[in-house]
Every structure is written in C-alpha cells, then in structure tokens.
Image 1 (cartoon, helix red, strand yellow):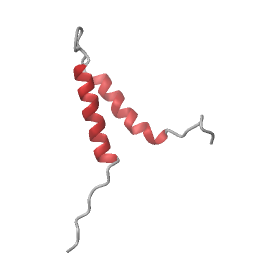
Image 2: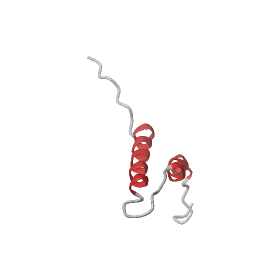
Image 3: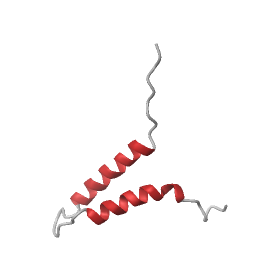
Image 4: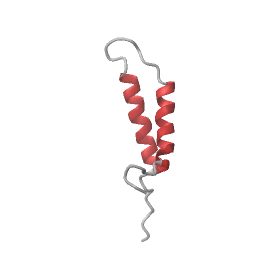
Length: 62
C-alpha cells in the first residue's frame, strides 16, 4: 500500500463519534455560537479516546 492509499478504516468509529456530535449539537448565531460544538466535540473525542485507546490498568498483585 502506498503512502497516498492509507487504510483509515480503524478511524471509522472516531469519525462516527465526531459526525454524531456535529449533527446533534445546536449552533447559535452570533459571537461564540460554535462554543457548544467545540466543547461537545472535545468531550466526545476525549471519552472515545479513554474507552478505545488508553489501555485499562490492571491491579498490581501483592
């Protein structure tokens, strides 16, 4: 596979999280109107990363 034909299928679940957040977050007109979208996207991606990317800790055995 060449550099311009990357397999991005592993990112599909993250793209779905982002798309859902963009579809469901209302955006107000005027200054600061996208603030809710930015904060909701930040939280949604952080939750996804916490669930899917960061490994869970295993308890230490004594």
